Length: 103
Image (cartoon, rainbow, N blue to C red):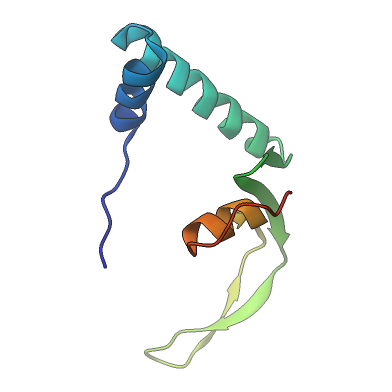
């Protein structure tokens, strides 16, 4: 089942329709929120949105990988990765359960 991809424009339109701000103000609000989330993650901090989930930056150390085509071992540099952990409320909504869990 392939779902629709929600874009910034879709989010801005939803804010416009539901909140009643102008389209310009709605777009600015979405950009401000997304910008704040990005800036926070860039600093290595966690973003936790109640009843939605948490965006966490994790440090991955250097390790040895293998080229699947040639089998040659290559070093993989240390890096930071961002992971999303959905809240129990979100998991429940996605799976069609009740929303009584709180995180």
